[in-house]
Length: 190
Image (cartoon, rainbow, N blue to C red; front, side, top):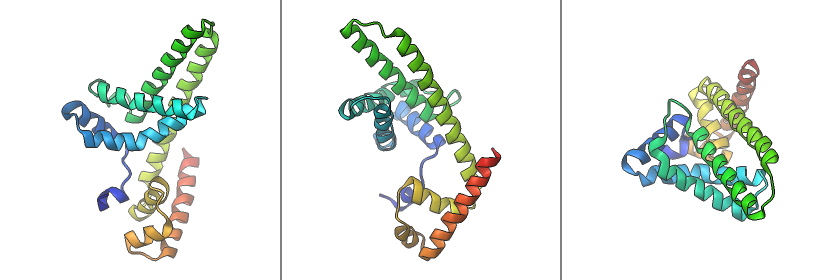
């Protein structure tokens, strides 16, 4: 992995750029990065909604295939990349429920409607949380933001962060502690 990829976690704007690159040039590298980032998150989302792990994996892959096919419909002015992808996921899950209902022949309309509203609320709440966190992260110093990205977004161990950034381990821990305190204060204000 190139060194510049290690220190940076793509932002929502970067993901939007990935989708636009897929739409314009069928960019497989951009799709691979999207898949690597969103695949596990989609699978977790489907598991939280009660699907078995194998079915959640299938639906996550189906979602990403739809992202590939529908990239030309993405409008970054209307929704963020994550929101757009999770709406596709939600719609595929609804389609799955409808197919299963048709197979069973049982009326699940009332349950499905309530479930759909709760899921839509979850997507909106997650998008709002993401926006607030990104705004707070943007207010950190570059040094603090770098260690937060490496530690929390890339799951890099503190010792490895110290090596990558060429700073002492104690400095890494101190910057993380200060950054988390500042983020907590900023998020409380919001």
